[in-house]
Structures are given as C-alpha cells and as structure tokens.
Image (cartoon, rainbow, N blue to C red; front, top):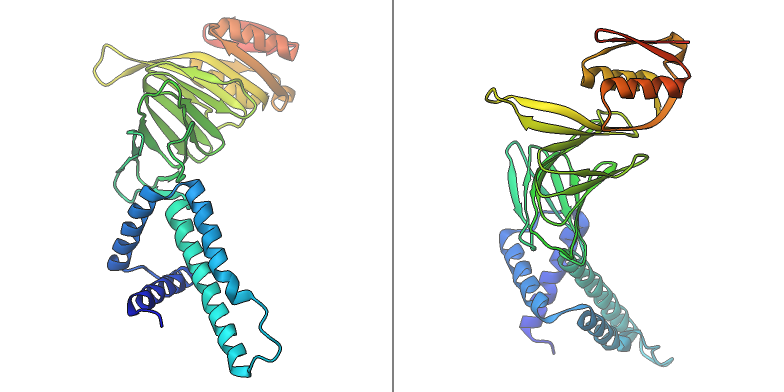
Length: 314
C-alpha cells in the first residue's frame, strides 16, 4: 500500500496538470513548491541525468503495459486499466512540469512603466513601456541569444568569446559587451549605441557596424539602412547629426529621394516617370553633391544644382 505522502504528491501533480490544461492560475503556495523543485532539480540534473531519469521512469512503468494473462478475472483487467491510465496521466503531468521548469523560455513584459530584467550572465535589460523579452532556458550558452518585441536598453556583460545577439522584428544586433538601445515603432527600426561596438544585420543590405554615439536606422523603409553620427552640439540638449552611410536594395526612387532630401536638407526635382524606378546603391562617406551625382548616373540622368536644389534631367 502506498504511503499517504506519495498519495499527496500524486494529487498535487494531478492538480497542476489540470491547471496546465485549463490554463488556470497557479496559487502562490503551489508556485513556491514548484520553485523549490526547480532549484533542487537544477542542482542534480543535467541532460545526461535527465535522460537516465526518463529511462528509469519508463522502465518502472513497463509492468503496467505488460499483456495480462488470458484467464485474468474482469476486476483485474479494470485494475490494470485504471493503473495504466493513472500512470499515463502522471507521466504527462510530470512532462508538462519538466517542460515548464527546464525547457519553456522565460518571458518578461513591461506594463505602463519600465522594467529591469537581470540576466544570468550579468547583463541588464531595461524594457520600455509595452516591451517583451524572451530568454531560452539554455541562456547563457556559447552564444547568448534573446528575442525582443518593442523597445529596450541593453547593458551587456562583456565576453570576448560569447556573443550577445538580440533578435528583433526583421533585424538583429550582435555585440560582445556594450550599452545600446533598440527601438521598434511600426516599420521604423533603429539601434542607438552608447558604449562599445555592435553589428546590425538587416535583410537585403550590408551589415552595419556602429561606434559610440552612432545610430542605425531603416527610416521605416524595407531594405534600407543608414548609419548616423549623433554628437552633442554646443547648445545644451541639441544633437549634431551627420549621415555616414546609406544603403538601398531594390527601393523606389521616390523613397530614396525622400530620405536624401530629409537628411541632406536639400530639394530634388526629377521626372515623374522615374518615381517608381527601383534603386540599389550603397553611399558611404560621400557628400550630398557626390551622392547626387552617383544617383543621377544610376538613373541615366544629368544633375544640375542651384543653391540647395538638385534637378535631374534627361
């Protein structure tokens, strides 16, 4: 006969399983017990031990699935069925608990106010309003990977051998140890670097490498990337910006012209039929005059400048 202690444990596990299926809320006491189990398990279990534990559990359950003797009485068959069903439910319950404790990613969200998240490697993430951070149970591993929705500021613990990668909406940021901010608002994406170095990857354009006081942005346009220098101006609170690089991959000329007009503070006049022509170009380190000459060459047009107005003609 089983002890009362084992019966209580089985009942507790069965209740948790019911909560998992119904998505009911787990009480504070139950959560406390789960945390105690997790702490103990983390000390004793690794992948090999978990595999061995699984084999021991399955081995112990084998007797419940053995074929009964043909002459077995009806009540024995019922007892076998009930026992097997109970064993399966218990196994599924333990599987759900083990998945939650050891494999299900940890998710952190911020409400109306910012929230600080302290990661196992010593990194600190400040989630801004409405942001969500997902961290795998394997973190930190050889590569430290997290997923971000919304805006956040990262203060990454330095490691020369373990890169820290943030996967955001359509782009990723890779660092070894630094402080930076990721912003995502609709199609607008940006990474602003305060300390260290980062590499920003975005589909269709070259990887951008940032230094402190630089910002990567796509201006809200797909397959577009720019690096902007952001230095403090003499006037308090003002920033002096300078466009350092600009890349387009199969972007309409109208969108290209809008970006260049806004960032160089110029005006571009062009034939209406060129508005939807697709542009692929990489402008790095050039002045407005040089980049406009290059753009006109791509379109097969000539450029004429008068003050801050550039006119493209056939």
